[in-house]
Image 1: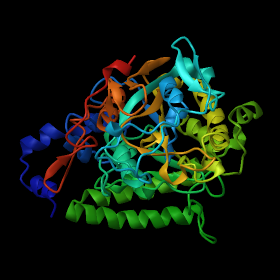
Image 2: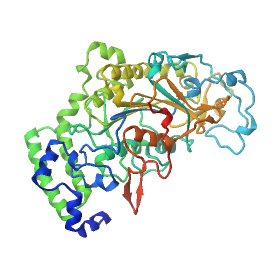
Image 3: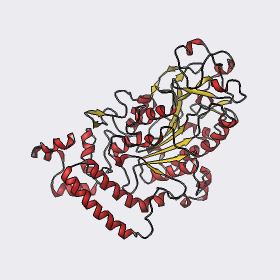
Length: 489
């Protein structure tokens, strides 16, 4: 028997009366508030005590944001060529990299003494805040005053899978809950007919971290991300098999739920309650998911604004679907777009034509997403996040050093991301790297600081959002992390 179930056996009547609303009045209040009467995040056990694991829950304090759209560019874009302009590095292109930046360092594909590489892109400042952007991003300048650019991000990992895991789960190793799982565990879902955490992939491949990037880890499995598709059935097996009617499906689920309820009563396992909730959610999703995933319902103007193509699996489609999902109350939408690993190993992975082509499929729909959210009054309560898992080197990648195609190696010490909406400052740039882009010069933001800040914007204290597992309380930020208050409006 689990530790928390053993504890229940020793609860006194006083404990029982203290921990739950009692009587018909409490039942009525819970029914009117959609489960909020039972919900609180005063401590970790409050989450586990909620009968409906998807029930909407109160944050620790007033939140700036209600929902998140997280755009992860898997492989990590070269932000020295997009958002972090280094004119001194451009002047010194072709020089040997200074020894001080190489001593004792390991790189994924570079050995010896590489050559410095300034950006081949043209940069300008945009908006009232003077946000620097390159010519690889022709559309994003339209929303420059909505963007909060962090140019001083840094991480502990320099290979894709562990860096993605570290960014999205707080640990470079498998087994921890993902960002979206922690958020839905803490806040529940606003729409009981849709998953609280939805994942949309594009680019033809999953991220290097695989499905661990949206897994539930040791949290109840109801908090795992639900992978949806913009082509074919939106969720695998969402439709009933041939010969099974919706009425028969309902009778089948009722019988299964009765058996699960008996098991829950006998063993008291939280995972059994989760299973019941998942069956019921899946039944409701058979109606709600196909409806929300059908972008044909959108106007011609909206579809053209995003560059979406109904019936295809594209990043633009996923951006439009993300807006539809948060509009319907989905708490956390994770977009993964594969193909941002610009080593320069071929023309499509070079910093000139290759980067322009890849940005063309991203820059337009991301701009449209931010504009659309603002037009609909959703941007203030929706936090949009854009970025990769680490940075790229200020020097040429070793394998392609003699090639005509320019590329950069993996680099953990500094990189850029941006946020928009959801309570962050618009038209603002936070932090700075040194003149050659090798290290953070001011206001560094570690991955754990960034995680703590996102949770703070959602009204959660990262030190209080915990789950007891194997004898200790775990959290997304492990034992680290400081909220970056300077980026909060």
